[in-house]
Amino acid sequence: MNKKTFADIPKKYSTLKNSKIVLILVPYDSNQTWKKGSKKGPEAFLSASNYMELYDIETNSEVYKKGIFIINSIKNSSISPKRMINKVKKITKKFLYEDKFVTLIGGDHSISIGSIRAFGEKYKNDLSILHMDAHADLRSIYNGNRYSHACSMYEASKKYPLVQIGIRSMDIMEINNIQKGNIFYMHEIYKSNLWMNNAINNLSKKYVYLSIDIDVLDPSIAPSTGTPEPGGLSWYTIMTFLRKVFETREVIGFDIVELLPNEKESSTDFLSAKLYYKLLSYKYEI
Image (cartoon, rainbow, N blue to C red; front, side, top):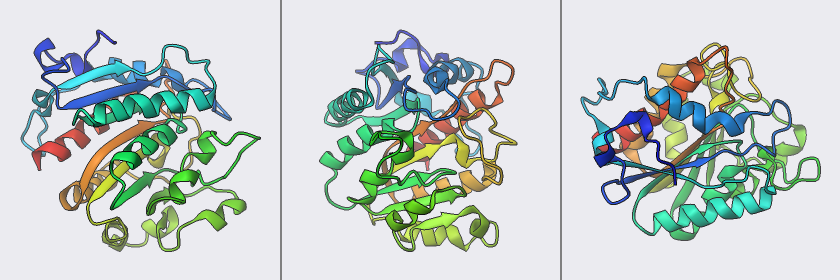
């Protein structure tokens, strides 16, 4: 258990009993292929959250009063990717069946394999995955590893409708794993806002699990990530889209991954905390 609270909220809003929301921290980056350090992401995220205003202007709300309980999912960040994924699945499933709104902060994107498995077991019918990322992450195996962050959406693509937003980098081998009509490339997104409604229409009608890699955002506003790619989404573009998603679908949980803290640049840490809080505000206040 972690004694820290999100955004330094009062203790009465951070106990399991009083919390509708569970925040699972997954400090893991053994799968990283370029820059390592995303295992420090959850700690940087929490630290930055302490400096965030808790009143959300857009929704006229203070969503922290729904309660946010924090738990650490792993103590040993050197365990194998397979063991990490199993641990993430187990702890996510535990809180799902306690009827909590489960959220996760990584760590590298491979943590999503475990969380999606857990959500898939509870929401077997009418579940879709909304994946926002600079990279497709659809390789069946990468450098001999089926649990690489580069494979984080492969398993999901074989089981559920998978809508992918912001993609602008991929290997030619991944083309065969794309769900036709469900991928929205950045060079297309910039041409028209029609993509927002088209993407939402491609989601299942009810349950949506959301996975956000920080590098879906442009590195001009989110430089501290493992593999920054130019040409990403802007803040208000992503928030406009996500609000539409929460308004029209039941988002049952989400993860935010690939924050790689830089001691000389903390704006991405703060952005991640703000993004997390905005998603909760959309979930409960619109």
